[in-house]
Image (cartoon, rainbow, N blue to C red):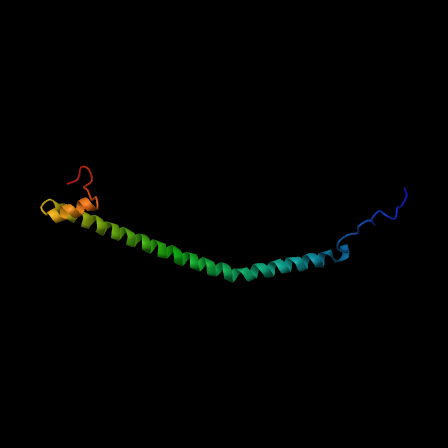
Length: 103
């Protein structure tokens, strides 16, 4: 077996085995510090998410109330349309009709 000067020297270990524990401990401490630094941000995002979820529930409740009021208003308009030509014109213009089978 001849040693050629053009061949690269064999690579040794990246970290001296004697210091491997300390290098691994340092890496774990860095990871732990990073994770601990993320907790306040995660807590803030969780609080914002809970707030947005509550706002969505409130808006859904408001939308249901508005829908009920509009249905009531449309029903009243259709009742009035039986005797009032202007109400008939409004119902025709906005294509408001009774549901089949209701009266």
